[in-house]
Length: 263
Length: 302
Image (tube, rainbow over all chains, first blue to last red; front, top):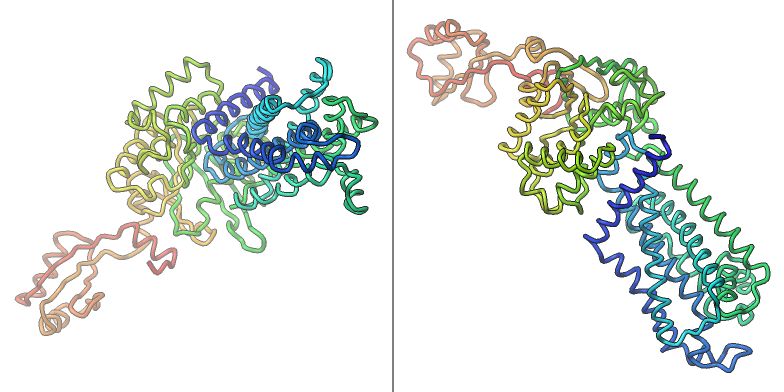
């Protein structure tokens, strides 16, 4: 077999290991699905009516707000899962078995790709649950099959990118505690963009940040695909940011993992 | 199997290993003996490709460590000081994980796992998460995982630290069987008895330097220490014995004497003839052991 096919095989082995570990210790996976759901219910049933009434150009109300807020909520699934990934990676690095893997003739990166693929599966599951519940609550996207396909593609890419970044965060931290704190800014980003309220409603400095941060074009593209709003150059920006974050996260994570482990 | 010259490693300006030379012959057990913090684990980490050395010409299993670490990895197995098992997986799953990473096919991997579970008496650990297993069982599982890939050279970093006497003996038995099968073992330990029982050659490491190397017998010959220890019931007995023996040293408490001796019956008889009718409350015969070597060479106040 070639090096590449060994890398694939080792990654599949590591993926099985991670999935099995998640089944044994399902709390974090459950949180990854539960928390975005709670936020969904919070924003629809608690804030929804009032926030919907404040949206410019719509008649307002809970249902309208649900349509508006869905891209932001889907990204909450992604960032919530990213936090779980960073914690899982940091926890894994404290395990003796990682040292064993490092002394074995395996594709080293497979330790990380196992985590990434496992986390992406978990993220996709979490997004699917949030979407399904939202549809039950009256979320009414206008997207046709092509748009849904584009949504799936973009979300896959975004999850992949954010997960690689989260793996790097999990590796760069020295403790599990800091691995749980470090992704906090990531968790806030959907709120500090066009996810929950239009950026026009924000004060100047905040608005500038909100319009230029990576999650805004991603959310605008999703909104355009799902609800038929204007996308403009958001799609290109969303793709560019995803590739940048994913590639950067991958290279950073790989470099961190190839360092000598600290004694 | 291992040839290292000029091995150096420092962390920041703390020199951990200072210009070490090591040579381990194939099919032998080499024990690295040293107090905590001597650098034993660092040596294992370097020779097992886990961390890099700062300097040194290092060859392990016929391959250059710096240039071809993957070839070294394919030939070695490592059982570290801290359990290298996946705590959330069962014993069997851990072994199958190793089989998968060694690219055994599914059936062969299952057979290998079952064989090792049986050989290492791990039936109880087979289907429960490793985290819930006893210390001795986890250590055996750890070693079994190391053996899945049939390594020619095994590093055992303090394999019995923290184990109860029975588990320790089981572990020794396993190590002897491995060596019987032609495997080379590089062992670190702080237990002198362990090195004495298992190793063909022993190196004593102290503060990053090798202070002695040889067989257990050669090392024991390095230090004096054979003596007869005599205990007395009262100070009068002690005084008369001290007068009778002349060359005796005071022992480690007020009522004991140490007389140099090679441990032979003749030397015992001679001492008692000289003592004549002085009442001796107790006699201990002390032959030099690795403890003496260790204490003499490492300056450890233990």
